[in-house]
Length: 398
Ligand code: GDP
Ligand code: MN
Image 1 (cartoon, rainbow, N blue to C red):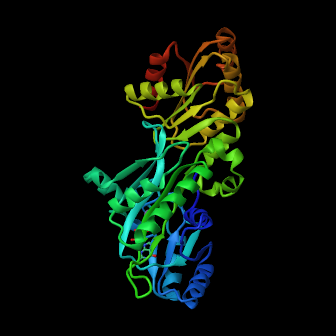
Image 2: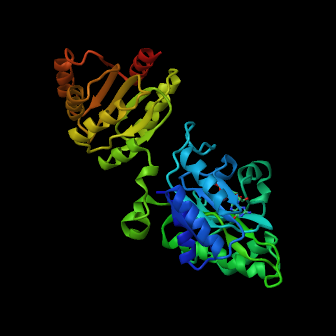
Image 3: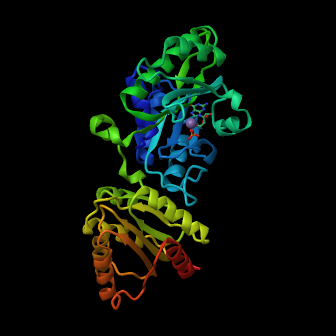
């Protein structure tokens, strides 16, 4: 589960990190009045930022530093009336419904700081770079040595010496060192306490030196979090931050019925049981020149109702030009699938070709059901094995 930056900033602030003042708004007028409030309170600059579940906002023009309320209004108007397109969004971009209006910060230098899981090392790892900012992906590709890593012990947590080591390696000077160490220790604490899978501050900045702050100040001005869905039952505060409007509607609907559904770009809808079989079904479709439109695992014990819903979800995708059903009946019984196909034909209707390959528990009964229904489901073909099924479905959409 992901959250917005304004919610992530709240988590950082709650953990005691310095975070600039600001508020989330949903209209141009509210953006202008929040900006006015910040300027009245003494902010020299204000930043208007689109709140969407994708990065690359800066380069896409959806993070704007403004000098007065009129500019804030302009920026908000633009962001709320244009879709944001970045390398991290779908090609058609994302609708922007929320903005963060926050006090802007003068920046002397930008750093990168994050914690995520290193699956190979089987532990959380702190990742840091002195070359933070909007080019971090390019830095990582061009010069991996500019990315520092420190493994976090699962029981002991991040140790202060590790944070100091990173802070010195990043080049923090004077009072910046302790401030950076505090940020790292607090980030590690938040990461652990919220069951996060990613906690990222990019950029973590140092402000320019002033008379009162000769070493500047270390401040987080962006916050990106993802959490382990399986931990949400014990993370009520985090679960409460869920924004369904940022999620794929079909994936949400599938979740309600206990289906694992991931929308993809191709035109062959797949209905499969078991993640492994789903993966190999996608592979064999590709092998025969097709492109899967989705990954859909109905699981082991799905009911006729859930499977019918699965068909509804697949068929509501306008890109789908053919459907492949590939079931190996173990716990799942083939006749349940066959009945769902008949039910889906009645309630949804198969407007596109359907190829069905069933094997395993109750397969004979399933075949009987399908043979009896074949007069009504004209677009249905059966297949004898996986290769036959893939060939047939690829031929129908070719
Ligand atoms: P992202 O591109 O989606 O990661 O959005 P960020 O919040 O990281 O903002 C992108 C870039 O905008 C940052 O790397 C900064 O260079 C700039 N930026 C963001 N906030 C401020 C601010 O308060 N002051 C200044 N001067 N620049 C900012
Ligand atoms: Mn950022």
